[in-house]
Structure formats: structure tokens, C-alpha cells
Image (cartoon, rainbow, N blue to C red):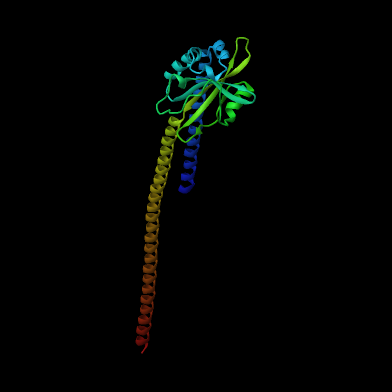
Length: 257
């Protein structure tokens, strides 16, 4: 196999490992945010949650009491933007609880949603979780102007087991992006190292081939010289033999006279 082929094969191997690492890194983050959403479900006081159905209840004692366990949960976490609950009414998503009423991450300057505040976005995964009444995790981070996040939505049930809404967790995807950047740097460093090794190996082989070619050329030249010298010696011997015969014939002729 040529060194170009070896480099290509090794490069494909590095590319495959890089792709697998990206997939596994994203899956690890998706698993983590799903676990957080599930862990937040038991913290919701279902009875209080069912009583909160009007924007006028925003900031009330009942509202803040229902938020507090989720806010404490949020405060103990890293890389989480929001923890909230939502319900589906008339095909529209409405927020009920939001931890940003009691705890806000650094840099968050958006106003908290009131009780029953309508979700203005178009997240199909959010809607899917409410319509299918099951755990849903976004397949990839969502990039916004100020941040990137990955969300998971876990189902909420009442005491009779009936579905009433979801708990949502928005995790900061900046750490994922940083790790992906580090992985890309590592990938390109590995590719550059492979290319350098291939070039060095090719250079070594070229020098060995050049030396071998020079040795063969020198051997061939020596063989030609030897053949020329042998031919010259043979010609000299023939000429000497001819001269010797001519001399003998001359002497024989003189003796007859």
C-alpha cells in the first residue's frame, strides 16, 4: 500500500473517531438533561399547580410556594437556564411555573412569564411532549441570539395518573460547544500529525529509493566499464596473436630464401 493510501486510511479512522465522539458527547448531554427533567417532576406540588390558572395569581403566595422547590433544585445545578412547567390549552402552550421568578442565572435579563403566559415560540419538540404525553428531548441544541440550549420535557401527572402537563429543563449548550471546539482542534491536530508523518515517511522512502537507484546506476556503470575493459583486453589479445602469426610467417619465409 502506498503512503498516500496509508495516510488516507489513517485519516478516515481519525474522522470516524471524531464523529463518534461528537455523537456520544451529544447523547451524554441529552441523557443528562432528560434525567434532570425527570428529577424535577416530584418537586411539583400537583394540588397547587392545578390551582394556578390565572395571570393575576402571578407572584401570589401560592405561586411562589409552588415554585420554591423547583427554584432550589435549579440553584443547585450548573449550566441550566430555566426550569418550568407548562400545559396545553386549545392547542397552545401556556407556562404555569418558572424558576426565574425566584432564581435567575447570571446574564438573564428577560422578564419572567406570568402564570398562564402563552409560549410564543414554535418548538415542535415542546409541543410533541405535550401532545404525546411523554418524555421528549431535543435532538440537538437550539441556537438563539444570546445563547444555545438543549431542552427536555418530562410528563406531569395528577394523583389519579392523568396527564396534566410537562416539566421543562433548558440546559446551557455552551459547554457542549466548547468541548466540540476542543475536539475539532484535536481532530485537525491529529490530521496534521498524520500528514507530517506521511510526508516524513515518504521523504525517507524517497531517499532510500534514490540511494538504491544511485547504487544500481553505479553498479551498472562498473559493469559497463568491466565489459569495455574485457573487450579491450580481448581486442589486444587478438591483435597480439595476429602480430605473432605475421612475425612467424615472415621468419619462415626468410628461412626458405
